[in-house]
Amino acid sequence: KNEVEQSPQNLTAQEGEFITINCSYSVGISALHWLQQHPGGGIVSLFMLSSGKKKHGRLIATINIQEKHSSLHITASHPRDSAVYICAAELRETSGSRLTFGEGTQLTVNP
Amino acid sequence: DADVTQTPRNRITKTGKRIMLECSQTKGHDRMYWYRQDPGLGLRLIYYSFDVKDINKGEISDGYSVSRQAQAKFSLSLESAIPNQTALYFCATSDAIPGAYNEQFFGPGTRLTVL
Image (tube, rainbow over all chains, first blue to last red):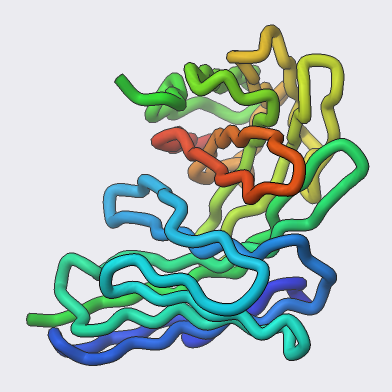
């Protein structure tokens, strides 16, 4: 079983819809990362959080440490939001940290 | 100019060949990582380095080796490439600020095909 599980694997929405992507993890983490992979392959970091909620524009990330669960929400979705969204758990080690990733959620937003 | 660069961007090679993928960064980060991405499996960690003298195996290091030539350079080698090493390979870097979130910055990826 993966240490990080995402759902759904694929999601198709109409422009303007509210979107939720879920992430559950089974390990102790120092932080939870959300990343976006563009259709061309490039990967960028969206959020890093260890408690509560963070907001950036139309994107909101929440985390519940007790339930080991995080969600990424997109409000008023737009076709340019179409991408793969990846959840990753940051695991701290003696001299640093590393990420372990979910499989990603392919989001397609249709006009 | 990109902060994290990878060369080559695309490579097609044959089974048994030795391949080196190179990663350079101008961000001044100590930490560097190599991942591979396969459809349906997500990103998996191959090797990581917290500084020039600290190199660690990730979850799928078999068949790979690395060299951290300098703070800015981290190379991944496939000593004898095999077809199931066909994948998209990413290099990433991060800072090491205690008590802070340390974002990972990814290179553009190298698409490797082993025939």
